[in-house]
Length: 124
View 1 (cartoon, rainbow, N blue to C red):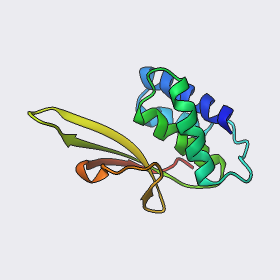
View 2: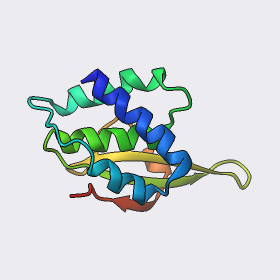
View 3: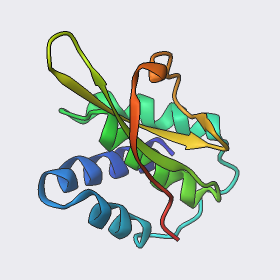
View 4: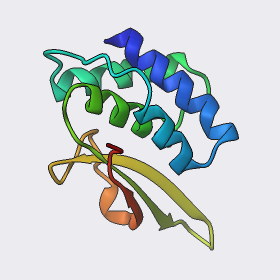
C-alpha cells in the first residue's frame, strides 16, 4: 500500500503542475482500478502520510488527491475540499482536505479557520 500511495503522490504532484484540478481528478479516477482489498481508512491515511515526505514539494492538495484515489480503490468515497483562511494582513492561505462520511480523514485541528470554497466528490 505504501508503494501505491507513493505512486499516486508522484502522479498528483507532477500533474498539478500541468493540468487543471478537475482534469487531474478525472484522469486519476480512470487509472488502474486494481482494488486495495482489505485496506482500512487508517491504512490509507498512514500510507499517504508515510509516503508524502519522500516526494519533494508535496503539499496538502497532492496528499488529498492521492488519498481520494486510494480510497476509491478501497471502495470508499471521499470528498475533496478546498478552503481559504485569511492570515494577518491581507494574505490568504489555502488548504485541501478529504472528508469521509462528513469527517476529515487526516487529523485537521485547524479546519474551523478555513472557509470552504469548493467540494469535489470522488469521480465515478
